[in-house]
Image (cartoon, rainbow, N blue to C red):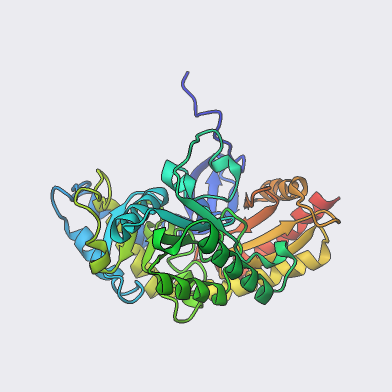
Length: 418
């Protein structure tokens, strides 16, 4: 009998039969508080009525209109609507299916537009599992092991991970920017460097926000050397961090290319890259395309998602509830020394488990995550050692659900620490 690949490992034992808002239900109709949101995908919660209705209507009219063959209204409307939220000047869009595909498209565009081959990425970044995207990924060897040789031309610079470096935030930024300058002086000359790819908050790498001064330093160096600044907002975009884009926490920093996916369509596969038209036009003919990109049903879901985010003020809610979540997580950490650091931005929150000597403690982290699942709270690990437990609730989360999660989390950590 056919079965799923044995390599696929589920983080929780739940077999979901339906979802509603912040909750998933299993075959026994047991309710599970979902603080994974499908790895940050179900931004408006499970089966938001307005998204469901938009999808239902669209599926009865046009399911697929391949957008290098014909155009359709949902694609045109979504392109126009995204103009209301995109960073200034980024007025040209290319739609795809997944974050990895969008990263590959941004990489291709950067090389075409600059005539340069090399790219710089940052320690702990995750950009995907396809060959080009995996070549840019340093969040863990599991994403790139055994498939080499990987794409050449990738240089890795430090990320300002203050906790891990044992530095203040300011010291970590100075250290990381000095390291970037050294990479430009010793590994990839500016004249050979097409782009820098960076996540405004490391995702798989451990939920570490990039300080504003760091992103400003990248922008300054990109401008000085004619390098494109590509911000991977696959996980951080669409309100997740309490601003529509995470880089908007860094005043004055505007990317040359922004990559979006995950929360864009409330669970439907859709991704995009956005860039100024002048830059996008430098992509070589035939380099952009794909069978399913800009699918009509996915575009309808994205349009409804934008409506819900606007009408329900979900970006502001992410900021408010994110602050409540981080405050509560820090309180739990103060009671249990197994949690050495709590960090995040908006509704991206991570708790890092360490041993008394400061080394990673993945075993206790895993016990806490399992104990939470047993109590009805679904969470995910991250970090190269798997010792960070992340919380990514949907943007519709309410204060009472934050408090419910914190109560369950405290009990889970207590059980894990015994």
